[in-house]
Length: 141
Image (cartoon, rainbow, N blue to C red; front, side, top):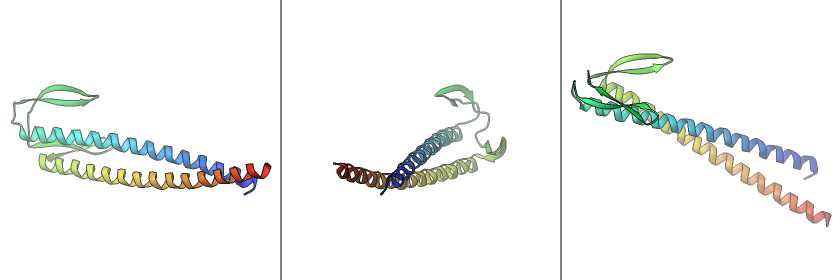
């Protein structure tokens, strides 16, 4: 491996590091979404068990809750994208949230697989660079 090839290998290693960082950021965003949907499911299930007029604690984000009274426990508004919500029966809403949780878990699994592949490539390239560097050092002695 000549000096130019060594520089190219070092550049490739830096590109893998950037790719790994992007994959990790995606994983964090997916994990936050998963936690959000899990809280939504828990809240929907709690409301579904309640009766109109009962007081409940509703999460509003940031680990904050407000006291609220259940008006209806049989229907709920569910976001379907870009600020659009649909009125659904509670059971359908919980099923929708469950589906989204499953999709997020699948995406997290794929992110984990991508992370493993990138880490493996980084490790292999790093070993090659290190071996070549040692060979070059021995050649200078």
